[in-house]
Image (cartoon, rainbow, N blue to C red; front, top):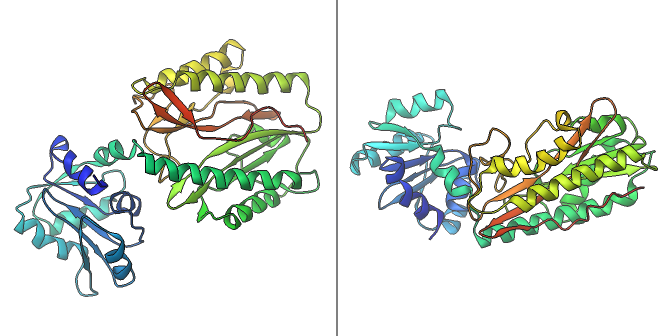
Length: 354
């Protein structure tokens, strides 16, 4: 069953007779075809993919399960889809309420004589579960990222800047086959490592902890990994905090399995950090789902209402951050199974001292 068929199967659950998909990421998910312009309409028995002359030939070759039609300069997507809505007597149309702008919504609503039904959750539900084929692609992305990370380790010294090291990492990602980075790498050292999402600066790598958070995009799929190294000999306190974070990550990963509440996974890791006296310094969630985007809808945090489905892929990334001093984060990615999870990250986790 392809993703167009999976979407069609869920239409009754979300009380819509058809689904309109306009965002690039969800068009990619539904069709496997990446384009900056297009619209996909999925009805009970048919589907239509509209795109312009730049993509039409490639779309015709790549897309199955939908009629591929070319737009023109004279007619908008709304004008092309309107007669299909009328012909198929579609009275309720699901749309991506999380990504369609209000202005875009008004444009579609004005042209189409049908009721619009918020149905982003339909797509979120499907995208949360990765097929074995999806997982294989994510593992390949992970391996490219890991190889690139290992290649920059010999370059790390106190004469290179954070920004230069981040640039070297991006270069190696692309050279090793990535389509793109999945996000801008976080490379922060010394006291800057206390900022979980710090931006690489022009200052040279400082002594102490060096946090590198990185990922690639390959065949549309994303990876995400964080490792914290130490430049120079760490203090006893630094070693202790690193080990607390590592223990917390292991506790959270051990809790992961299909059917568990995501907040319980977070709680398992958070309990380790709180008992060690650093609860106030773990300010983000244990993890998030990823796939075609580096942050997708599932989250493992204290306020999460999600239950982990079999086949989900989530990050495992607890951290401790002491403002103005240093921070530690260790991040792997795991694949959720009925009996636990599979860690798809291959990099070692013991503290590396350079």
